[in-house]
Image (cartoon, rainbow, N blue to C red; front, side):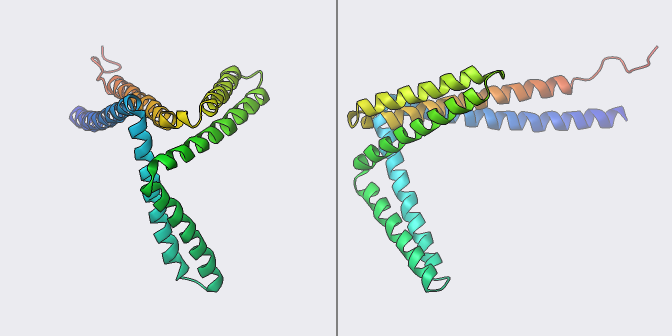
Length: 200
């Protein structure tokens, strides 16, 4: 019986170790990409613009395929969406720098909406633990949006790429910490007891 328990614990330990290594490796790669994006925000922003353009072109092809799978009304709506997606995607691919300025405007709009919502939710949760942090986060989002908008279009050169890099760095480091915590918990949970219960 003890041999079976030990074997099961070893299997759990090996599975946890493999999962830990995979999560730690993925977190490290994401963090490194984030650092590179922070060091070269313009290149990161242009890359995002090109990626978005490619995704829009793919979306246009999907809408074209859907246009031929229904009636005339469906054909018109899906065809119109395909044209819009195609124009936007090809424009971003042809001139990603202009697309980067558009992404910067969208980023400012997102930060404004996110900031206002966080402030509102924070005050609604007033009295609960952490409500102040939510309000502070919302205010910071509005401040960042204001700074980016005040320097636009010059901020388009770095804003999107820099914030994207910071997000990747934070996400990667968080994954690494979570992987380490999971490994520690698994090791503590599978540590064998030195003495069986009820032993004299």
